Structure formats: C-alpha cells, structure tokens
Amino acid sequence: MFFPGQVPGVASTLLFIASEGFSKISYNTGLTLLRSTIGFSLGFATALLLGLLYTLHPLLRETVRALNTILQSISVLIWVVVLVMIFGVLSPLPPILVAALVSLPIVLAATVSGLDASSKKLAELAAMIGANRLSYYKDFLLPSLAPTLAGAARSALGAALRISVVAEAFGSSGGIGYMITNYYNLAEPEGVFAWGLILVVLMILLDKAVLEPIEKRAARWSIAS
Image (cartoon, rainbow, N blue to C red; front, side):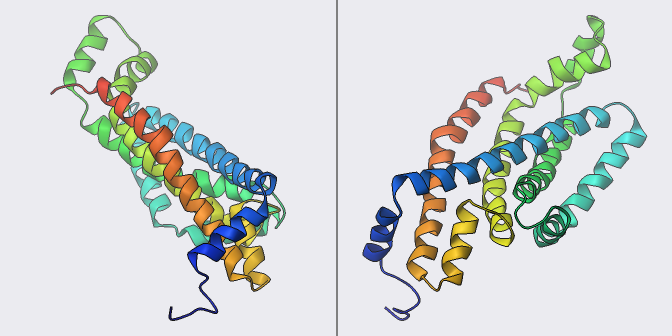
C-alpha cells in the first residue's frame, strides 16, 4: 500500500513464482538445500569430534571452550567475505563452508553443555564394564545427549540454510541467494520477493516435516536425573 513500486502484492509474487517454472525452482532450491545440508553435516561432525577431545584432558577442555567462544564472536559477514576472496565468486565452497562455520558453534555449545551436565551414573556404568574413553563417549555420552543434540541440530540447520543463502548472494553460480541477488540487480522486486518466499516455505517444510519429528523421536533417549 505504501511502496507499490518497490513491494509487489501477493498475487503478482505468486504469479512470478509460477512463471519461473518447476525445473528452475527445483534446481536452485535443491542446490541451496544441498549446500546447506553438506555444510551442516561438516559442522555437526566437527562438533562431535571436538566433544570427544573435550572429555580427554582438562587442557583440551579449555581449548575447546576457547575455540567455541572465538567462533561465536566472528560475524557471518566476515566468514562470507573471506571465503569468497579465497575460493572465488563462482566456487561452490563458500556457501558450504559458511554453513559449516555457522552450525559448528551452535552444536558445539550444546555438546559441551550436555557433557558438563552428564550423569555420573554413566561414568560409573562405563567403568564397571571396562569401556575405554572412545567407547564411553560413543556408546554412553552421545546417546544421553541425543535430545540436546537434536534440538541444537534443528537450530543449526535452520541457521545454515539462512546463512548459506547470504553466501550465495555474495558469490555463486546458482541457488536461492543467487536468484535473489540476480533479480535485485535486474530491478525486479517480484523476483526478489518470490525467491524470498520460496526460501521461507522451504525452511518451514524442512522444520515441520523433518527436523521436528527427529527432535521428538530423540526425546525418547532422555535420561531422568
């Protein structure tokens, strides 16, 4: 109503989405989802590895804490710009690595918090059966952290999806972020809002159809103190 030249209406936005065609939308949406998922997986795996180091020695524990503080302090904009400078505008790596660097501190913070609050009964049980450090972490601590990790993963993947779009906008050859920037440069507001709406729908579907059921299932592993 107030900015009709800059903000398109709902009908014109939906018509623009329809005009883009299924193949174009599915390709770019799938590209963004793939990059985000790969980056999230890298960040999640790295967080679990650092969690193992956290349990091995007091010095490693303080190192992991310091690393997580540093990662949380660095702006996403810095990661995006630096990675685009290193790998180039058309490289697929910046969106993936940015998603990983955003996911890592979210999952790591939850892992560290869960390890600090883990029940001493687990350590006693592991000692009784003669479990080594790796087995204790893998077979006792991680299952007990399943509800915490599932909640953190839900937040981390959502953040990875949003941030990878920013990286695509700075430098990429495809994806939702690339399409938003492309239509912005062409001065087509319908395109900007259309692809923004596609991103919102993608995130809602991913959260409700995949992440929320996983989090509810993981809640079964909750251990009463």
